[in-house]
Image (tube, rainbow, N blue to C red; front, side, top):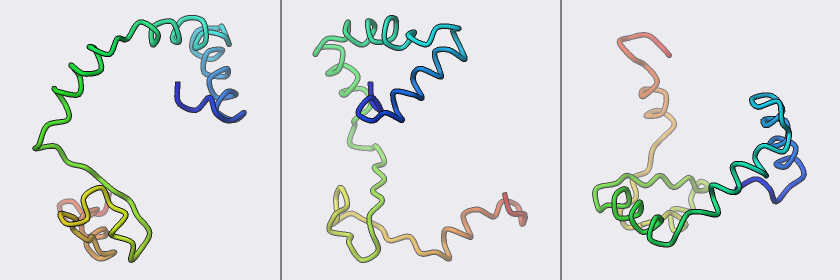
Length: 94
């Protein structure tokens, strides 16, 4: 239940419940109960499926702080120019 640490996060959960289910307590009464049923084996099964060696990990770090990346030795620096070029598709900007 990420986001519940702050009042803003709680407000978003309450508003979402009211908007989508006409029940502001929906996340706390229905969704939270679902989260409680997850077992360690469930988490491990999902981790084995998705956290494979071929996965891509994106680390967003301050400029010049590549040592803070998930795997600094395998990091690739992306320049502002390559960011702009990546947004151009078929000669047109997205």
